[in-house]
Every structure is written in C-alpha cells, then in structure tokens.
Length: 381
Image (cartoon, rainbow, N blue to C red; front, side):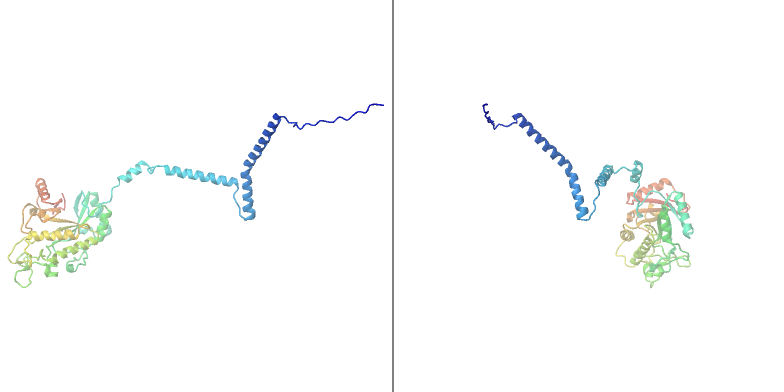
C-alpha cells in the first residue's frame, strides 16, 4: 500500500516584499506627484478665481465685468498715458523756442503816463485838433518827426480856456471854439505820445472878473481890480493874486479836470506876480510871506495835491532864469521847481553855450529836468 504523503506546512515570514531601496523610490514618487498636483493647482488658481468671480457678479449680482483682454488693454493704455504724462512733467519749462523766450524777457514794462521820458517836445496848434481824424493825423505826424511830448495849449494868458471846463470860476473863460481834451489825450497816447496840457496860471484877465476875490486889487479904492496899464483902454489887464487861496484853488481845479480827461502831465506858465510893481497893488492878507516864498508855497501845494497822478512842469522866460526878477523874487529852481521849461524870447537867436550854462545852473539849484522852448518857432531843445 502506497505511503501516504504528508502536507507540508508553508512557513510564513512577516518580512515585506519591498526592499529599503524600493521604499525610498516610492516615497520620492509620492512627493513628486504631490508637487506636480500643487504646481498645477497654483497655475490654475487665477483662472479658477476669475471664473468664480465672474460667475458671482454675472449670475448672482447681475453685473458685468470686462474680460481679461480688455482689462489688460486698459491697463496698458493707462500705463502708456502715465508714461507720457511723466515725460511731459520731466520736460523743462523752457521748452518754448529760445527766440520767443528771449523776446518775452526783453519786452519792456509800459511806462506810466506820469513818467518823464527822453525825447523831443512839440507844440501843437489847436486848429489841427478839430476832429478825431485831424487829431490822429496830427499825432502821427508828430510821432513821425520824433516827438515824444505834445504840448496842447488849453488855457492861455488871455484868460481863455479852449475846452468845455465845468469849473465854476471858469464860467466866463470858455472860448467860442473848443476842442475835446479827452479825445486828444486818448489818441495821442494811442500813437505813442505824451500829451501835456498847457495852462497859464495867474496871468488871467477873464477869471479875475468872474471871481474878484481871486484878483489883485487897487489899494484902498473900493474893490476895483488893479490893471497892468493905466486903464483898460490903454491895454491894462487884471491879474490873479498868487496870495489868494481861491486863485490857487482855481488853478488846481483846472489841473484836476484835465487829469480826469486823460492828461497826466501839465505845464503851468505865468506862475508869477505881475512884472510891474506898484504901490497901488493890494494883495490882501499875505501872512508876512515874500513874493518868492508865496510862489514857492503855491508850487509846493500843487505838487503835493497831484503827487503820483500828475507830473507838473513850470515854464519861465529865459530872463527869469538868468537873473532874479520882481515877478518871482528868486530864480525858478529856488522856488522848488523840479521840472523846468525855459522859454526863449521871440526874435532872438539862441546861444547854445549860454543855454547849456543856464540849464546847468538850474540843475545845480535843484531842478531835476530842464527843457528849452523856442516861443516863436515852437521848437524845443
């Protein structure tokens, strides 16, 4: 009988089939896979977030958002605009053409109308100022001849005023034919001229009768006006009294009126006493002032009243600038005259050396500016 085989027991070992090297490789593989998954998630995250955000606003909040392409385009446009703005900001302020910049810097400031300027003077005839066209034509003619100052005689030694003055004491003084001082001043300035109003002060036989309180009186004869000749038939004329406050105020009011018309410079003549000295003259209350002291006070009062708005010139004949006359009691510069016009006598040929010496003498005594006028030809030196 055959021998019966025994079943052998299988012996089991609790040892892993993976070797140590295989375990290390497995661990490295797992780490690599995790890294790949995380990397993919990291790269996909913006798109997932964009999708989620877009879904939230479009579906839940019912709002629309720009797509990524338009947003990027807008962002790029904004960056380019910012760059351009930055370039403009960095550009220097002096990017204008150099020639234009230098021209702007070289352009002088306009001078005020009261400024005393270098340049020639010219006397203007009132007959040339009848209307706007004539005024402009005369202004251009004077400018073409090189004149800077244009002297317009608006009140003369006959006592007449050649514009429609509204000053009460001038009620009888306005001439039959008048000019428009405002239009003259405006057009002359437009054409580059300095308009100067000529005003005779105390030699005035008309206003003396309008307000007798302004005039030189006959001493002790009941208010009769003193005349510079035996009588009116002999050509005697009344004079305004430099001691009289109303006379001083009358001249000041005319200056102010002309300033309102546009004249910022005025030339006063006949700022003096009558040349003849007589015991029959009565000047009223003098306050103990001499003739020269009173004239100096009148000049100072006008200069103070119009300081900064009107430049005042004072015209005196040549003989009053070379020797002390009874009409002044001193030389013009000694009266405080700053801006002097020396009038040459008619019919005399001027001596340039003598004129220069006289002008220098006036400046030594205090005059700041001296102009010489030929009374006959109207020329200035």
